[in-house]
Length: 544
Image (cartoon, rainbow, N blue to C red; front, side, top):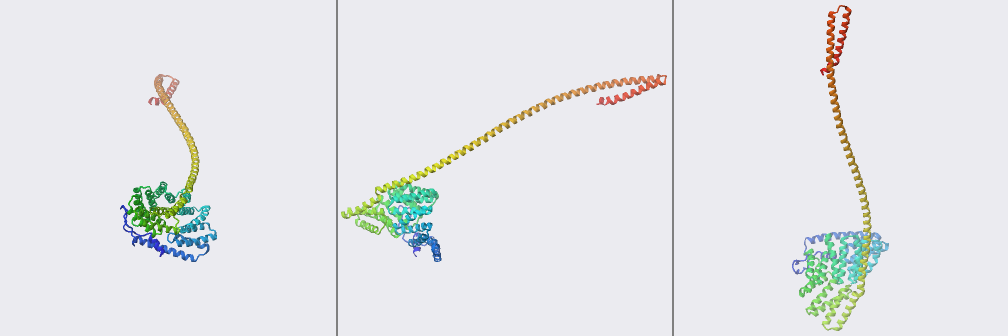
C-alpha cells in the first residue's frame, strides 16, 4: 500500500489550473482516475510483479550470489520507499564488504548513502560517500564516481557547506566534460548553478543555469527541465526582474499543464509568492506562500517548509501581524531543533526572529537570536568560505587551463604533422605535375616533329610525284618520237623492199639464165623474209 501511495502522488491530476492567467488558481488536493491513472496502475502492477520475483529469487540465494538480488531490490525501492531501499542496500553493502567486492561496495554504498540522505541521516550519508569515493576513483568506476561526487555535492549544499559542495561538483564537471555526454553535463551545470544561487551570486548562477538550459535544448531532453526553469525564474526574482522571472515560471508550468506533481506545485507557489512579495502585493504573496508551505508539509520537504515560513513571517511583519509571524517562526525553530540540516534556512529564521523581537522590544530574546544568527552566518559565510571558494574555482580553472594547454599542444602536434603531410603531398603533387608538364612538352615536341616529318615526307612525295610525272611525260614523248621514227623507218624499209621486189620481178622476167634467175629468187625470198620481220616488228607499234 505504501508503494502504491508513493507512486500515485507523482501522477495526480489537479484541477483549476490555467498557466495563461496572471495567477493560476488553487490546485485541488485530490486525484481523478483517468487514462493516465490507468497506465500508472498497470506500471505499478508490473513493478510489483518484478519486486515479488526478486524477493522469491532472494530466498534461493546466499552469500555473494545474493548480492545482485539485494542490490536490484534496493535500486527498485530507492524512488519508492527509502526505508526499504536503505535496508536492502545495507544488506548488499555488508556482503560486498565481506567478500572484498570493490564494485559491489561502491554500487551498494552509493544507494545506501542516497537512501540515508533522503531519510535525513545526512552525516551518515556523507561519511559513507566519502568512504566509497576513493574506491571508485582508484578503480576508475567512472559512472559510479560521477554519482558519488554529485551526491557529496548535494549533501554539502544541504549542510550549507558550499565550498565543499562546489569542489565535488567541479570534480564531477571535469570528468563529465571529458566524457562529452551533454545530458550529464546539463545535470552537473544545473547543480553548480544551484550552489551559486544559495551563495546569492545570481549572475554566476544564471551563467551555469543558462549553459544547462542550452544543452537540454540542444539534445531535446526535458529531464528536470521544470526545476531548471523554476530556478531561472527564482534568480530573476531575486534580481528584481519580475517579468523575466514570470516568463520562466510560465514555461515551467506549460510542461506539465494540469498534471503537475505536488512537489512541482510547491516550487511554483513559492516562486509566485516571491514575485508578488517583490511587487508589494502582500495578500497574493501570502496566499502562495501558504499553499507552498502546505504542499511542503504534505511531501515532507523541510527545506521548503522553512523557506515558506521565513516569507510568511516577513509578510506578517509587514502587515504588523507580529503574533502570527512569531507563531510561524517558533514552528520553524521547532523544526530546526528536530535536527534539520538546512543551515542557510536557519540563518534566515534567526534573522527574522531577532528582527521580530526587536520590534516587540523583547531585547533579551532579540540578543539571543541575533547571537545565533551571527555565529551561524560567520560559520557559513566567513572569510574562510570566501577563500575556499576562490581557491576551488582557481584550482578548477587551473586544471581546465592545464587540460586546455595539453589539448592545444596535442592540436599543435597534430597540426605540425598535418602540415608535414600536407607539404609532402604538395611536393609529391608538384613532382607529379612537373613530370606531367615534361611529358606533355615531350609529347608536344614529338607531335610537332612527327607533323614536321610527315609534312616533309608529303612534300618529298609531292616533289617525287611531280618528278615522276615529268619523267613519265618525257618517256611518253620519247616513246611517241621513237614510234614516229620507227613508223617512218618501217615505211621507208617497206618502200625499199617493195622496190627491190619489184626490180627482182622485172629481172626474173628478163633473165636469160636459170642461175641468174635463181639468185634473183633468193634475193626476192630474202626480201620477203625481211619484209615479214619488218611487219612483225614495226607494224604493231605503228598500229598502237
